[in-house]
Length: 158
Image (cartoon, rainbow, N blue to C red; front, side, top):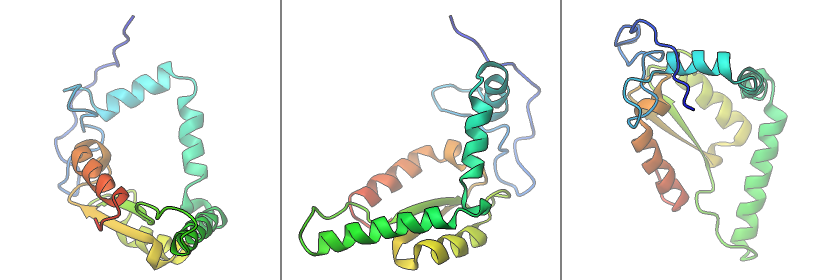
């Protein structure tokens, strides 16, 4: 049995920054016409785990004082790099954390995230890819993001 998300009036094609509308962004090229807004409405009404999972992702974001957790990640990456340099393990493929940001994102502000991530993780462990997109970036730039991740995992600069 298939459940279709509810339909709603189409939002404007662009947000206030001139980028694609987040709510109106299509979630997949394989599901044309299915938007973020429709999907969120369906998840909220049909998936009891959605709200707790979403809230958990917010609670563990760096904006909510998670610097200790992110510092732990930094330590693990540094130890992996050190072991690799000593020949004790295979070189890590992509020994950095890649942050992919939308230039016009009104939720995750490029300059703020770059400053916070660099301060907590260290400038040598972060790389930033900024694309012409807003908060809908993961849906509207999925192919480009996949290429960037593959490039990083191959040990190349993005």
